[in-house]
Every structure is written in C-alpha cells, then in structure tokens.
Length: 92
Image (cartoon, rainbow, N blue to C red; front, top):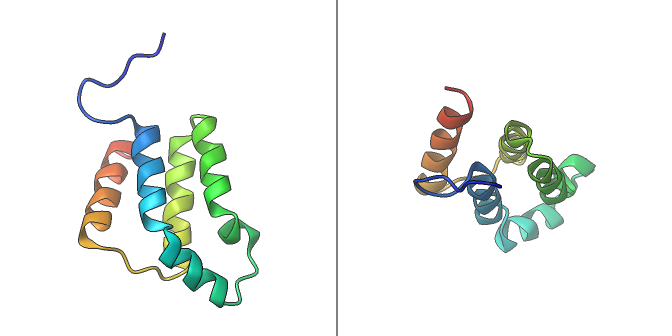
C-alpha cells in the first residue's frame, strides 16, 4: 500500500507537473523551429516520464534541468522557485 504524503504532492507528481509546465506548447514550437539533433532533448518528455515511472526522481529532475539548460529556456520566477524547492528536496 502506498501512502500519500501528508503535505502536498508526491515528488513524482511535482516533477511531472513542472515538466508539463516548462515543456509547454510554446517551448515545443520553439524547439521545433531550431535545429536540434539530440534525441535526449527531442524526446525529453518521454525520457523524464520513464524515469518517473521507475521512481528515479533524481534522474528525472536532472534530465529536466539539463534540457532547460541546453535549450536556454527562460523560466518564470515560479518555475525557478519550484526547481529550487525540488533541488532542496532531492539534495538535502
């Protein structure tokens, strides 16, 4: 039996929701217009999802931050704060 956290979402849901929030349609459109050859970037949602399904939350988070860095994605203040919070949870 899995227990839900007492406060807030599970790490899996937090990372999944942040991934959807950052890698939105605008991001996808921008990436499609650039000449990116890396399958790890082009298939990043699938890669992150696979890590999350295997409960490899640190790997999923690391891949999300890698994609953000490599694609020079501008984040909102809220997204930046969420990344900082998740980093503290995963790397206490």
